[in-house]
Structure formats: C-alpha cells, structure tokens
Length: 358
Length: 241
Image (tube, rainbow over all chains, first blue to last red; front, side, top):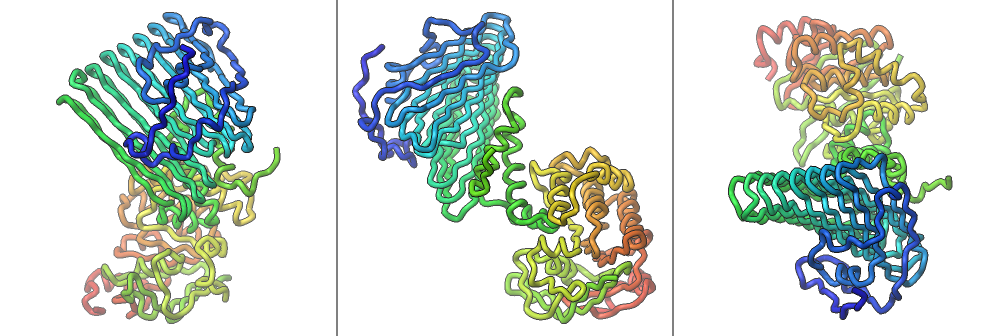
C-alpha cells in the first residue's frame, strides 16, 4: 500500500488529457504533505478501518494510483436503515506551500440508509501546492447519498481529483460540485450504475476568472437494466480563464431500458476566455433513452437588452443573467448546502475588484 | 407635461433602410396609434426608440423633453422615462421579475421599500397571478401571462412614455382587455403618453387613441383621429400603399 508507484506522467496526446495543463506539472516540485482537516457531524458513522477500494476497483490514472499509495483516508459507514440527520461537513485546509496531499473520502451507505456529505477544499492564494483528492461512494440497495464538493482553493493551487461511485439496486447517488478556485483544477467524476434501478445525478457549477482553468471529465456508466443518470454541468469563464468539459455516457450491453441525460452549458464572459465542451455517447444496447446537449456562448444579447430596457444598468443585467444561468444548478444542490455563501462567492467571482472586506 | 419628439428619423437594419423619415410628437396623456401593414417598419421604430443593438440611425433625432435619447444607452433611456412593452418578451432563464424590478427601481433611486406590495397590487389590477413574479421571466408563460407581466412592470415603473409594440399580439380577449384598460388608466392617473403599434383596431376598444398614424414603407403617410382606424377597418391599407 505504501509503495510509491513509479511516476510516468500522462500527456495531452491521450484523449482524456487533451486540453489539460498536465504538461506544466512537475511532481518533483512537491514534497508529500498533509491537509488540516475538520470533520463535523461524522462521529456516529466514521470508522477507523480504511474502506478504500469499495467503489474504485481500478486506478484510472497515475494520480489515483498515487492517492491509493499515500492516502489520508476518512471512511464513513452508514449502517443499514440509518438516516443521518443534517449534513456531515468535512473541511480541508491546505496550508503548506510546495506539498502534494492525498486525501481520500470513502462513503459506504448500506441498504436503505441516507446521508449528506459536504466536503470543502480551501487554500490561500499564495499556496503553490497540489491536492489529489479521491472520493469513493458505494450506495447500497435503496440507499441515498448526497455529496457536494466545494473547491475554494487559492489561485496558485492545483487539483487533480477523482470521484467514483457505484450505485446498487434502486439506490440514488447525487454528486454535486461547486468549483470556484484553483489555478488548474481537474476532476474526473464517474458514476457507475451496477444494479437494476440505480439512479445517479451529477451537477456542477464552475466559474473561472483570471488565468484559472477548470477541467472536468465525466462518465455515466450504465451496467445494469433500468438504470437512470442525469448530468447538468454549467460553467462560466471570464478574463483569460479556460474550462474544459468532456463527458461520456456509456450504456453497456446489459443495461437495456436505461435512461441517460447529459447537459453542459458554458458562458464566456470575456473576449479572451475560452470554454470547450465535448459530449460523447457510447450505446451498446437497444431500448434506451439518451440525450446530450452542449453549448458555449456569451451572454445572450436579447436577454441583456430586455433587462436594460427596464432601466437595469448593463453590468447588473449581466450579473442577473449569470446568476439566473447558475440558478438551475444551485436549485439542485443538497438541501443543507449554504446557498447564500455560495451566491456571495459567485458574486465575488463576477466583481472581484468590488470586494468589500467583511 | 413631457414631450417625446421624433424628427426626420431614418434607420437601417443589416444595411437596409427601414425607417425613411419619421416625424412624431407625443405629449403626456396622449395616445398615438401607429398602424400599418407587415414590413412597414413599425417594430423597427420601437426598437430604434429604445436603442436595441443591430439598428443603425442614419439621420434625425429622438428627444424627450429636449434631451437627446439617441446619445444615451438603452438603460438610461428607460431611466429618463421611456418604456418598451415588447411584442415577444424575451425569456430570461433563472431571473425573476421581482429581481428585475428591484434593480430597475434602485437604478432610478426610488428604493425598493413597499415594492412587493406594489407589484402585487399592480398584478391583481390586471388579473395576473402575483406568484408569476417569482418565476423565471417569460419562461413557460402563456401569451396572455407574458403581456400581463409586461403591463405589470409598466405599472410599477411609471414611465413618462410607453411604447407598446403589438401589445395585442398573442393575447386572448380577456388579457387584452385587462392590459389595454390598465394602460388607458395610466394616461389619466399618471399622465402616461403612449405610442401604440398595432395591426388591429380591437386594441382601441379599451385604449382610446387621440391620433392614428398610418405607416407604410418606413414613412407616416396619413394621420388623423380615431375615425382613420375605422376607415382602415373598412378599406384596408390599399388606399395608402
């Protein structure tokens, strides 16, 4: 477990790393370090044994492998039939400069249990470090897992993360992301629906400014009949920021009568900002219902004119439209999310120069 | 008493001259109807008055109490007292009418105290469900609901002049009566001046025009009293084309 794998860096020649900034990464610039982690509300379900490996059976890349060898693991086991009240909050502070940290959160929701977990990553703008987080979720028969990750990393911090869930019979897995921070922040998020009737929802709000880059690779993998997945990712880029979304719906031969939906929408708020969206479908059986949609565009001029014709100044009209754009995602976040805090953070991304100390 | 004056207005869209010299003077409390066949330039006139992107003014002026509207961006024209009721109100996903009213009032330095009560009052006056103001603007609304929503905003913002771009299109008879009656009332209660663009005289059952203008091929070819609309109803535009 502790043997550090030989590090062979991927390259942008590989499709899954296309458009990424992986070529800029020098692992030798970092020493192995740790996060300072606060955990609230987990006492009754946290277990001391490591549950690593319950959902991620193979390592999709070198970073998942490095995490496997070095992880600081938090394992949660929700016993059969238990509904955890409120939300479990896990807040990671990345305080050391020049380190690479490997947090791993494992959630094992047993039959008919329910839990909401909100995991937040925070660092200051001057922390030149790398965080390689892994999330594993096993959603047992008829269980419900609601998960939200909030990226509030500083503007010098990198993230290369993985999320993997396995949904069992008639279970519901919801993976939500709010990504505002990081210099380069990548997340590969994969839901597997492994037994009949399993359902998964993935939503994300991401907003990059300055020279930030957000990079999402999503997979919706249907391995059993009558499974359902729904994905809604909405992003905005301003200044010279960039974002990449590539998503795959994969319906395997055994997954007849499944439904899978994937929507990615992007707003480019500045001339120099850039967003890429690449949806993909791979369907290996009949009798399925799938759709995907993707858009990249600037603020709709008709919408802006409508608001301005009421007497709303242009910059406020644009702010209303961006908030309206993100509302669809905010409405789908777990009910215990601090939506007002998130709105304030989004507003700060829109008007960083107007920041008022509070 | 305010005056909206349009003089010698010529404008083009995509290199094609649509307005070929429009002269109009509307005073507070007056209702001017602009009627004309499809393609006459009626909607272009409303867009140019409000400063919609994509329209280029070639000559002429638009002033409100002597202030040059063409020099102002759209939102400042609205603050100055112009209000456009759109033929096809734009859907703005995730943005609610009450948020827009709050920003619009703030920009006018009018404050938002009592705004909710005012919105509800205006909505009920035109038989609009007040709950609609907390839903996304014009998304999944019927034609009647959209125009009621437009009319509610007019009531709350109290502009000096309203430009109604085919208020009567896509509207059922009940909604048309409610909206037209509200605009007519505003001409008395707050001395609203109105430029009503329409194809149909049925609008005038509730909204009484003081002057009717016939617009053909980018020009006003005839002006008269309400009887001009009645004549149109019988003879059509043939006499003017």
